Image (cartoon, rainbow, N blue to C red; front, top):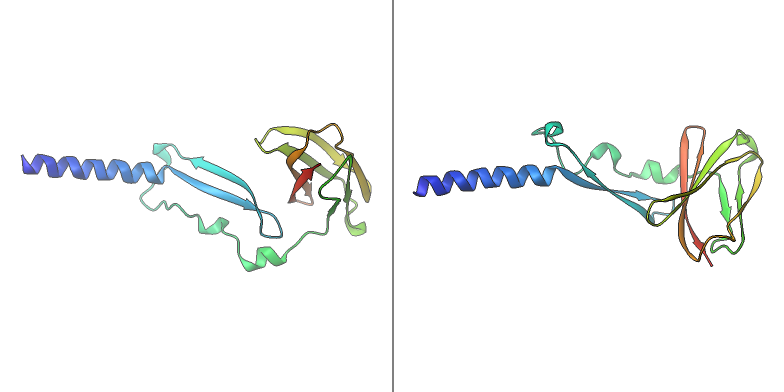
Length: 147
């Protein structure tokens, strides 16, 4: 009977250990170090290996990433009706923006073609939004507070 309990405990331990490895939480940060997003990643049991860990070291933020700040400027924040997105003169290639609410729902998508772009946000209800600007294979993100 003790052997049966021991085997049951071992099986339970393996199942719990696999369940813990089956999901991880990844956080996204803006250039100032503020956490702006949280993603729960769930893996299929067929994708799990014994070498899997909860922390993916290749996606950790390091000092090099923090010093590599973008040159896109977004103001004013908090915003009333018009949000200004200023692209540097050296990077006037077309950029794309996406505006999300706090639930992760995509509200707007568009192109930024000029150096000083004005986004009309007066129709949005007051609250917190996430603005992503994708240019030259890089994405910058900001928390936008709508008054």
